[in-house]
Image (tube, rainbow, N blue to C red):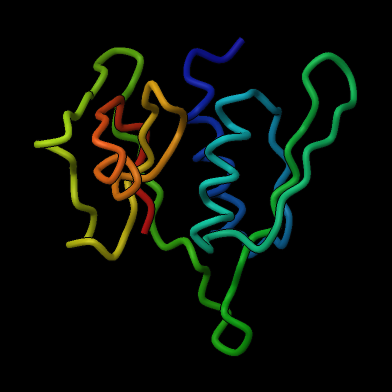
Length: 132
């Protein structure tokens, strides 16, 4: 059993990028699926597929690299809120990642979204991770 599945998810993606893998396979959960959708919508991953095999299922993520220089689209993935110390942000104290160039993924009462979407919808929530 894993104590922090989101940190495991981010570490698997980080390790796959460092090893220049094209595809990474991760055990699925609803929160991980939502984070994957946000990463795809913002252009950090090339594609994803949810496989429903067994009780849990898997998420297959196709990582995105620059076609010529082979630099990955995701440079940094950082876990912010941990099980031992949760980090919450209101609308006023919403984090700006790399002065607006990166995204912060938040878990709000209206679902998982980026910091910009949360500001537009006027909701705060738990800051899951920073991506840039």
